Each structure stands twice: as structure tokens, then as C-alpha cells.
Image (tube, rainbow, N blue to C red; front, side, top):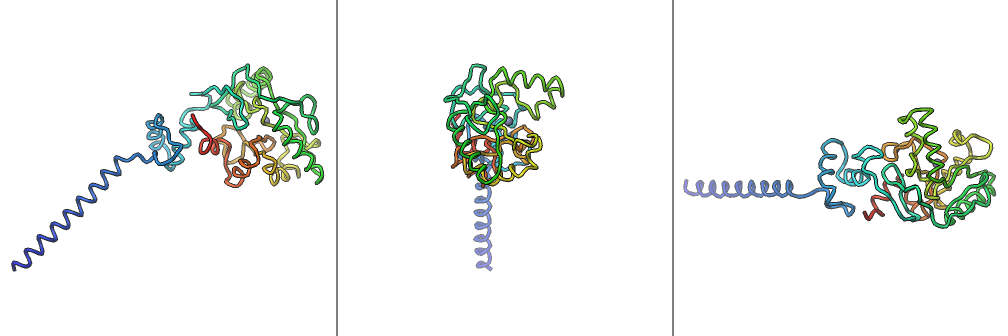
Length: 267
Ligand SMILES: [Zn+2]
């Protein structure tokens, strides 16, 4: 009888200890910050992460990335001015350049382009290389829109907004300052014969799908990433990011935003 009481006491002690351990673990879990484990975590965004996590169905990692991208704010709000040219600069619906901004090393595109097209020199050389090799294989890639000034974009956007209304225009045209074409690192292409709107249905598009990354270019506005880029699918718009990054972006099926905020963002 005595023995049994002792066993019982020992059992109770064990159960209590176990319970204490579970409780301790739970308290610890509630006190840890699950966003902190990512190296792109920003302390200043913590409240935004918490709110975004509650209101959406994303993993902690995606919450941190998307809030850093500013996706918890509407497009064109909480925007940031980008002052310096950089081959890996990000201009999108949250990051803009002012009307005096000019890309470094702006040069005229010497071949494979309609008249008076300008690009950053590194981007231009990569494009000529791309278009030359495409031509050797029988494909015509031509630049039809490259660097745009603020004033040019201003006119373009205002005309679209007048024609289609602001909401519709915003899905396909950037507001002045917010266009990637300001960077001198973006190119719209066609195949000479077909309107660029139908570029997706050309063999040149297929060639670009398979080869553009080898020259450092990415398809900038893919069909499955509209929620991130804020732009409808644009099979004709390519961005120069260099060969190494273009390869990763293609292999991992990322947008430049996703790559930028995971690996490049220092702000
Ligand atoms: Zn474009």
C-alpha cells in the first residue's frame, strides 16, 4: 500500500514537470518574433508584418518580403525616391525617379532598333549581342521603345488616362517617374512584322523565352505575378539585370521585386 502511494506521488511529480515544460515552451513561442529569422527582416516594419499576417494567408517569409516590397500599401502610396543610377536599381509603383533623373552612360542603340532609341551602354551592348545571335538563328528582335524621359512618359500616361481612365491606364502604363523605361535598362521589342501586342504569338517570343536570360535580360511583367508588379502581362518588355541574376530569376520563376527584396535591398 505504502509503495503504491510513493509511485503515485512520483507519477504526479512527473506529470507536473511535463506540464510545466509544455507551458514554458508555449510562453516562449508566444514571445518569439517569427519574422526575425529572415535576414531581410526590418525591425521598423514589425507592426506591419503582424497586421499583414493576420489579414492574409501568407507564410512568415512571404509576409516579410511582401511588406518590405510595400504591398501592404496601395500602388503609388508610401513611395520612395531613388536618386542614383545603378545597374540593379528598382523602379516600380513604389520606387520612382524625379524629373531630372538621367541614367549613366546613355548611348544610342546602334542596331536592331527603330530610330532614336537610347539605353545604358552595358544594357545596349548586351541587347546588340542578343539580337545579333537571334538573327544568326533566323529571328528578328527589334527594340521599339527603350529609354524614356519624364516628359515623354508624362504625355504617354496622360493620353492613356484620358482615353481609358486612370484605373485602366494604371494596369498597362506607368505614371511619370515610376516607369522602368526611365532607367535606360528596359526594352520593349517586336519582331518587325507583327505588332508588339501580339509578340507573345511569335517565334521570336519563344526564342526570347529560351534565350534572353543568357544575355542578362528578364521578362519583367509575367502573367502570374500581376499582384506583385502591378502590371498586366507584357511579353514584349524586358529588363537588363546581368547574366548571373537573370539566370536565377528565370530558374526560380521570380520577379525582379522578389529577387531585389530577398537579396539586394539595403534600405
Ligand atoms: Zn515597356
